[in-house]
Image (tube, rainbow, N blue to C red; front, top):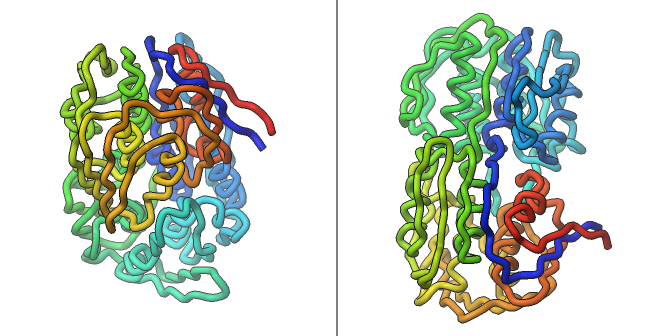
Length: 429
């Protein structure tokens, strides 16, 4: 099994290209099920989850071709996918595929919207909490789908098609908002989606659906109005840059006292996170086409943060911030309000010398003078990259196991960090 080996203590300097957002690319790929025509997506990241979703979509009859480089395209830019679902050949998404990736469950909405039926396995994915699908199922029921559970599968039926309706989400949920959008765009009549998630990735999906012929108003707000159409069309869309990757590399630069340009990053996608980093003493400079992050002298300062839906501090950056605060002056308080089991990285950070106390949904992180290398194990996607950040600052050698978690969400991480001076490599065994 592959591992990541890091010899810490190296200052990061240089440029890191930011990839397309995984959390945007996945629902955009799924949206190809809504039309018979070709959906072209640019800046698709090279990730294990993207490859797995391509297999899931292929099972439904989606033809995928990966276009060659365009003139002037840099090697760091993402892939161009052409997805065509001219015919849906199978409306079942089997357990062996969906159980490996939670986003695979989202095919339920476009399949029942277009075909009037779908049978999708209950999902798997990172073990960071229960993340029930009840909200997604209830969303489809509000649009007229009949739902039953049978042998670990969700079976949805709408033989006369879905019907527009008022959809009120009981809690802010990215997955439920994706589901509501992809169902409502082919439903008969108007739909009003209330308490919708405002994450940039939701807006990216909505903007792509508009390019495909959907009528959607209120994009970027908690209330979305959708006029259903009989059919959607092909479109050309570019995946937005990954704000979680941006924040992750910003913290990696800071913990090493580095100076890094995050090429292609968009500061408007993570203003709350950037403000939090400024509060720690990090220099953040917004530039045309990117963000410069520098920690040239001075100590990091402790902060108090509570994860919240967008535009608040992202839960997907909580583990990375915790790693950064392990070497800050004072005691930081990090409260996790989104997922009840997203502190599994605490024990592994402790193996590197971190001083962290858990009290319910809050972690108290007291900065130490230095971390030391150790053998650690990744438990989920974001936890795994927090160990990379800590390992970059630790004295000596850090070895991280289960790096397949990293490959799900970070494109060529050892290459990107290595180009900026990190001593990092992928090893077997």
